[in-house]
Length: 223
Image 1 (cartoon, rainbow, N blue to C red):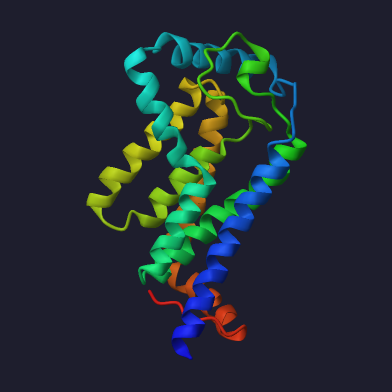
Image 2 (cartoon, helix red, strand yellow):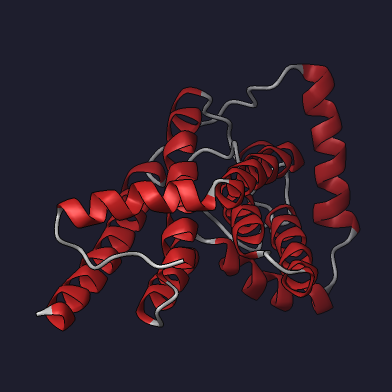
């Protein structure tokens, strides 16, 4: 019976992760704003920084690697990683990582709806290597990678891997032409704060999640 409950809880966890990603892809990607949103002094600085990172650093040697790395910032990637951690027995890390990604996504939803900033390729002649729909502000990819770095970076060795990865993935969003620099800064800072809060209050958050899991008959969380 315990094995059946563990399997059922694992499948439900995976279904929850995929459900969140499905909502994100179906709803947000259909929004298509055309406004700059930010006032001239800020938008002018943002444009200069964008043009430097998007065109000034352009190189055929960077195109392929950054296009691959940028997908490591997707919500789907981190939710699937959470599911793998869950199935491998690291349920504490899995629950905390998934919670940080999901909470960040829920916080970003009203921002994207009520602050509909157009993506760079709608406003300027950007060098576009990736086309995405939906509002530009803030960057969900930057939020995800910095949340993950904060949650999973428990050791110095992990941090030396995760934070450079987070920075590179965030930079790739500008390089590929899908985000303005301030989108990435806002997304990265927000994600980092969410991740740090989750890491600092790890035991308290897991205690709450464990209580909820026990109420509905899920297998207990560990760690």
